[in-house]
Amino acid sequence: QVQLVESGGGLVQPGGSLRLSCAASGTILSINTMGWYRQAPGTQRELVAVITSGGGTNYADSVKGRFTISRDNAKNTVLLQMNSLKSEDTAVYYCNANLRVVLGSRGEYWGQGTQVTVSS
Image (cartoon, rainbow, N blue to C red; front, side, top):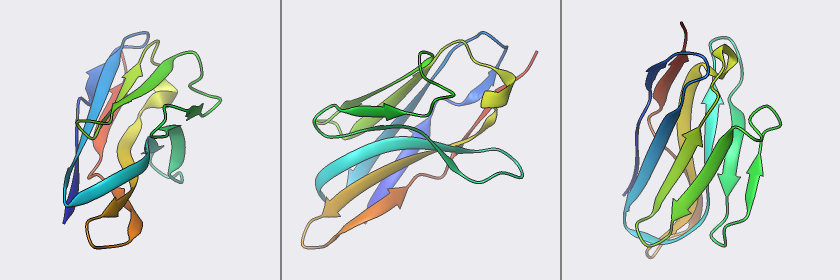
């Protein structure tokens, strides 16, 4: 069984910063990509940032230059440093991992989500 546990969400003023963390645990053999998605009320879930096991990254245009994704392969964790936050960044943020389990297949796994609210 695999679990992705997120932390670090909360309320912040516009222009502020937050750091999200996600730790994957369980019978994991290998992790390919790890990433963050977000979903605001009434909208579809969208990609925020993704990072490969080799460190390659991809960002949504709306967060480029403000957000930074990183990962620790030894600890199966992924971080999202969010700076210069805007009200439009308000959403539930979900951790995602594409991984292979021991004696099993590769698949997509999701965390439970953490709320980020940017408001004065």
